[in-house]
Image (cartoon, rainbow, N blue to C red; front, side):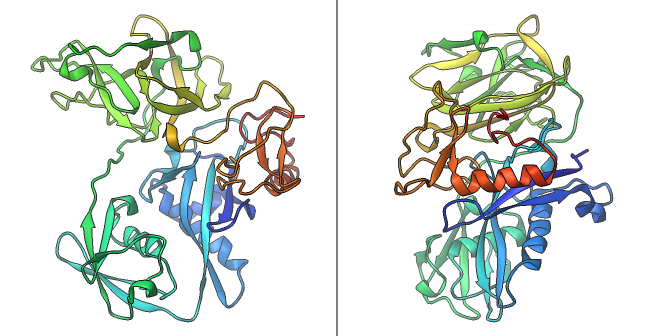
Length: 399
């Protein structure tokens, strides 16, 4: 069950700083009749709320939803990114674009199966927007799409008119392989205590490691294979999740790389990535979250535990990972003095960059986190409207 309401920060995709906070409530999904709520349902709700506040000549639409800067696919279950945690920190950010209401064209898209679909666009819409409409129609994530027109691959940031795409033009869809998710609700699970830093150990790579102990950059989930016919039977295997969000309670798609049998997750390892977690232990039901941490160097960082020790019961646990070269400065500082930011650093409320230094354009919270001043101001107003004490959206520290 979702919380009665949760906030979604929204911003224009070409602007810096957030534009506002939208409350999404349980009652908004009353027509789902018990069916699982997907991110596309959240997008529909946000579009309706944004449309009611838009000008008569303009239409503002959500182009993507992000969690900690990681884009969420339309078919990703909402329950897997909103764990049952106390508090209302803004985890989900919606990026939007504004379009003219009155002029649309029909564009045909030939899919991988040979069928043809149609999407409604404006000539000034970007290719990225067209991919979003294709994802809405056939469910293929836009990251997996490549579009070709007149023998040339079209790029996301250009408009359709840039490539002379007009009414009744046909685009060709070409596949780019990308990973995915599967999962459903389950009971609290025993897993490594990722809040205990003493368990995290750096392991050197071995040239003699068996096939089932091969890791990838990003997140690697480990468990013990129970298939008697598998060469990895009774051994700890590694399922390479790479840079996918992982929800321990609801992701039941952890598999042995040798026999593809399902495996109960026991612990995890990290390689060449930045990572963080948020969750709630069953023992005390206190919600907790970490700052971004860096797994750097040519070593495998593993939470050294097994079924006999180093594990706890998790009521909810979400692991987020990013490539190190895409990581942003969102770490808890040792000093409470304002920290100089560079143009590439990002505000972790709206996930847009700080841009060129402007006096008083950003603010440092008492705990040391940096945000756009307007984002911090709007978030504080949202907290006050909802009768909650203003707190840092990252670590939830107040005062």
